[in-house]
Image (tube, rainbow, N blue to C red; front, side, top):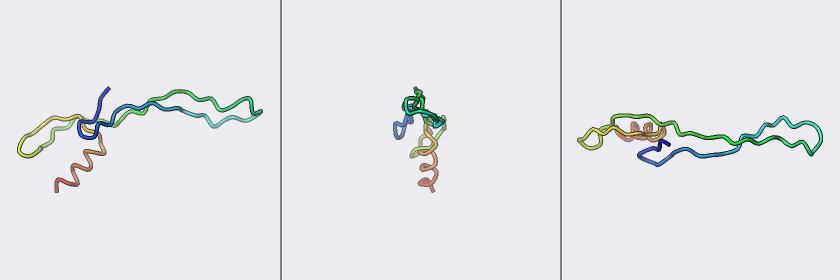
Length: 69
């Protein structure tokens, strides 16, 4: 799976819980597996005086734009 070249953020797994569980206590809310994927973009960034094409998450891209000023 794709990972951020800066922070290493990638895909993680979790559980999805339905909160509709009315009735007796034996019928609990069903839990299903799900995937949390990082919001990765391919961008061409200037690092120093070289241009590099990176797979970077939007959080790092946002931070990069703020520190570049």
